[in-house]
Image (spheres, one colour):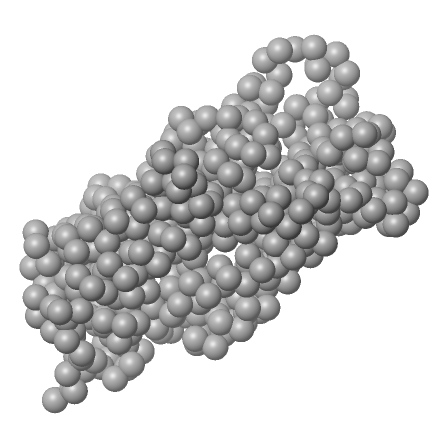
Length: 486
């Protein structure tokens, strides 16, 4: 294999013009996957902080934290787990974000540098399938919110056995309509949905405080763990679940940072927005779920179930409308943008962003989100920890290749060309495939062989480390450091 490319442009595409006519004629190109020119990179620190505020204030964030309370943690243990997990996932987030801000390229194009121009479809589709699952989860939550509204307005609706599936289908069709008409149809929602849901969360917190008799009683629920060993056995997969929660966006963050004014803008914005917003909104879920133990005698980890017990029909309707707006917003921003690009990458000339979005909608149903949300155990230990075993190894390959082997140098034009620098062997870098398979295999061996269960509990971390080392070992003998520009 040839040595790593020279950085003849000085600092990526900002310092040199791309031959757009050449890449536009390629079968690997379409406008949705094109590099963003420097003049269109306008996102500031505020934009990235606001992005994370909008993405973090959602029902799955609430359920992630409340599931820890339902599983036996006290509020301090749960909030520590959430904060630590988000600090950890911020590291690969910022590392992968660099290429997007430097070269203006989305995730599936960035993956071509390490996996090959065709091999990049493998990590892209793995990431896309996870997004399809998240799309289904968010849509199921939206359906539950609609069902709760109907019950508040017409109590007899709760006796209709097909009520939830019908509401789910209705909300699914609403998402399909948005995708069919284009992302611009939801822009007016984005500015108000997250703040609205935040207000609902605060209102729910005040309601829980009143019902429980103050913050003292509602946060006094003790941990169910009687020893450090018991706590640690629950803490590790919970921490992995928190990392897994955003391990999806940690891969496709170039889809957003490709619009950054500078590296500093995206780094500071993300560092300010992600850990703080996630921890704060998680606290609402933790506190309210702790209060439900006092108020109802059981830990209700699903906020829709709590909101449906507010009593006053108007309060329930207003709360559920807020849930619907925020869920629709997050579903489009977090669960459509990336998989639509990933599916488009399969066949750029025939699959547009819109078509990719519709594929996501269809697969979202096929992944049966009602089973993923059946309990806090299936949500955290099955869904979040499970898929992190695929995404951790992908991150390991991307980061090792970009920072250690390529020294942050990418030939953008070759990412869109057959027979170019990133052709490898027939479009596939089999070393990257081997490293990915090794990382996934080691992470999931604990799922099939109980004595090694700890490997699965650490799935993201184990997969990342194993694939990173395997890829470096396989590639370092064949890739030399970049040569000085002539």
